Image (cartoon, rainbow, N blue to C red; front, top):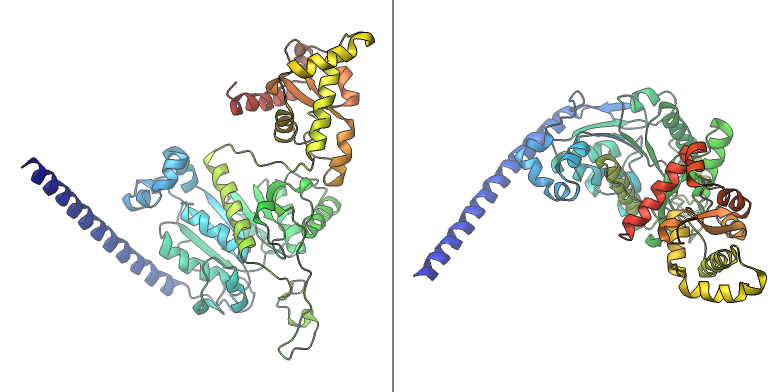
Length: 469
């Protein structure tokens, strides 16, 4: 009898669950039809060509702090809420993000921002969906070929998360459209543009306006997803576009860095292809440009790489908006020999402190046996904590091969000389900085250089957390 009761209860629960799911889906389908009808009625702006226009819609709506109170929205974002926590997801859902450039990188970034519950999105691109862009675009289909990328994304997005305020502008970013695109105090701007002039102008404007911006560099002609990184513009290497942007920002706008970029450490697999007309003959691609200075179908692209670039950008923005403190992998080009050198210098320096020369050999042996730091821990300290540079350098001065040369003047020393060498008590310094550091107490440093003191304490605290010390 008990068995039959249990089966009846299970059956009733399954039936109740099926009915609730059915009615929830019917409600979602009804909302989708309403949204599609509104989208069709309102998207009346002319989008052919690159003259600026705004696709009408819900542009006057203010981002709601109560978005998650909607039962359907909270269910749709359940996994995000579980990951971030309710209050942090509220921050995400109350945020406004601008995505400029809606090709392979931008379309994927915007899609995951939308799916993650961003409350307001502005989508900007002057270009149209082409048949050749379908190998990397996030949502475009053959039916979308010929319409603007901004309109394409908006229409698809409204069927995914209609509660989001989605504005779309079919226009080219430049000085004349800066105010229209960057006004409204966005919480983040995503630069997914592949034209250097436009990219430099946008990044400079964001710095001038004090806006958070994340920039994507070249994703074309690459194939290795494990080489993709996020770092300061100063540290991006092996990327011609990044190098050119860095040079132009420094020369024209006196901007040295401070802009996070997504880039690949991989050297391009293939070169730019010659442009061929439909007849098969090579022609000048500038004759086919919609806008002067923009490339025309000559960069080989494996669609997965720009998609991953976009996903990386979305993750970075979402965690930042949610207040989740993340640590990106530093760009450090040392190999194991370098870490062995740092480890050996640590042993020698630790053993030689106050030791007479006749006893040095014995001290080196005993120190290497009892030193509580091995080579793997030296790698963590040098790479993860200090990013391959002196603790006194906040920003990278040497990248690429320059970093290899910089190892010749770096060594690990104890932060607090009264305590043993350990993961949470070692810093990287240049040779000429060591004597001054070891002649001071921590109280001296705290009094004379409070900012430096606080920064080092914060880094060493991270080591304690990572190793549960």
